[in-house]
Picture 1 (tube, each protein chain N blue to C red):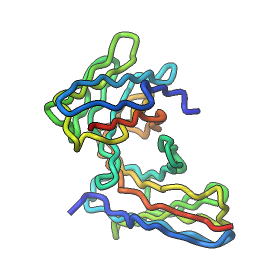
Picture 2 (cartoon, rainbow over the protein chains, first blue to last red):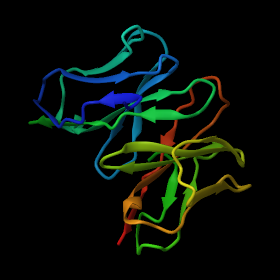
Picture 3 (cartoon, each protein chain N blue to C red):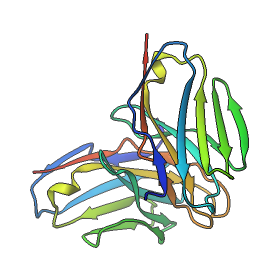
Picture 4 (cartoon, chains in turn yellow, blue):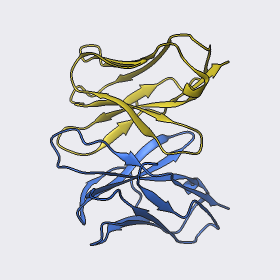
Length: 111
Length: 115
């Protein structure tokens, strides 16, 4: 079993839809939880990070962490074709700089 | 543009060969990380250097090695290449010390094709 599980998709939604992306993890020691966006042929870029359980909002993006269920989510409101990318969740191992990444979910927002 | 540069962008080589990938971190960042991204394995952490010293090791093969130089640029050496080594190799950099969150900024990657 992988430490971080993420549905690879692809996920296709119409423009304006609310998108929900999810990851589950097995290591309860994970400390920071990140979401990265990766456009085709580019490096990942950090979208959001959270530390504790709960919600964090940034514009159209909301990151949610449920440590008791070992489950994190990224919600995208009013999705746009420019949101079409692969979304990677990542988690940090305490005391290190080591990140464990999910395999990524490919999202396509149709105009 | 993240400020992290990687060269070359593309590399095509044959099995058994050795290649060197280069990374220059963002100005002021002391940490450099190397990742391998393949379709079936996703983004895999290979190794991390902080100010010239190795700090963390991930799933890095013995055929691979890395170093960080005094000017903070880093090189990843891949030897005895196999077909399965074909992947995107990313370098990332960050500042700060362990214990808190340090955003990693990724370079554009080097696409390695082993024929």
